[in-house]
Image (cartoon, rainbow, N blue to C red; front, side, top):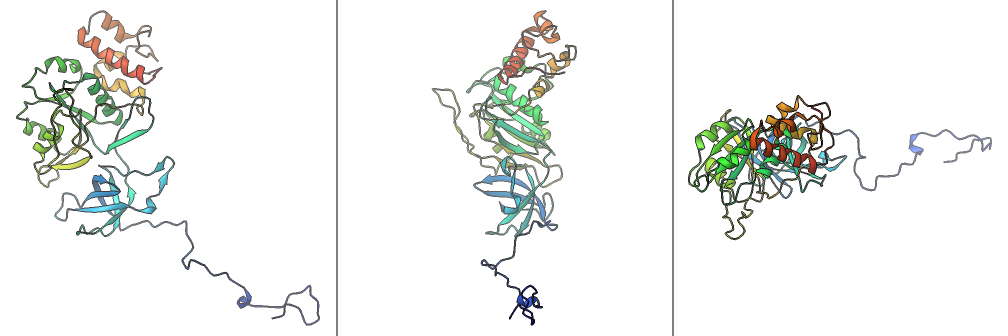
Length: 358
């Protein structure tokens, strides 16, 4: 078709319709990408109970007759955040679409992570700012230690307490193997804390008391390798079948037996049933991610005295007019108070804290 007018004036274009327009075909034959993302209004909610190589075990319709387990994968739509990939961890509440029947061979997609109430984290060491998420939405921490074989480590327990209080989680303490050694000297380190303590022999746990404390809670179990943590989980949940190991007779250290973080229901299907999250045993618990200002919260006995300290007091040995140091030096808190202050000062020094406003 000529685009010249009849009078030969090439400055004017001929009239033409839309059929004259040339449109380059889409070589991929698919629709152009849209910034509008689906809302997934029909998504179902579930709780992640296990994570294994990109596959997530999820409980759906929890505590109802339709309760079921299903396997899910992360949807591409979940995307990334500013820090990198979005992590789905044990304890997360998530929204799922796709095949949510739970039938064998089915695979659902996780499209959203619901807001988390708590997040328990640790780092490889105190200088490592990279955090490792242990569990989400737990409201209690069950710290398991042994009275002997392996020997209890008060400083490691202090670290668990710091991580718990920093995350807003209530700590509980279980001391196992009390038939092998008197736990009193170890427990004296925590005499000033409002801490629920359970004691057990090698051959028997106070299961009824522990179950009552875990009822209607999500509790994460932590502990040094070989202290009996997985044995306790197996006693609370007979069908858990968590691997257990013995302590090395030469080194006195436990062997890592639990290699994954898994959540189990305690008790029958009920609104009052609790959940316990078993975690791999660790020999160190880095606090590089913790806000130093939160450390004092785990030493409640010292925190009460710190209210009398000058504003900005660091509670370190060179702190002027520190009420805690003055009372310890005066002997008012006894030897236990001195040990507690030493543990607190060691932690804040390690983390490089320079000021802790009270």
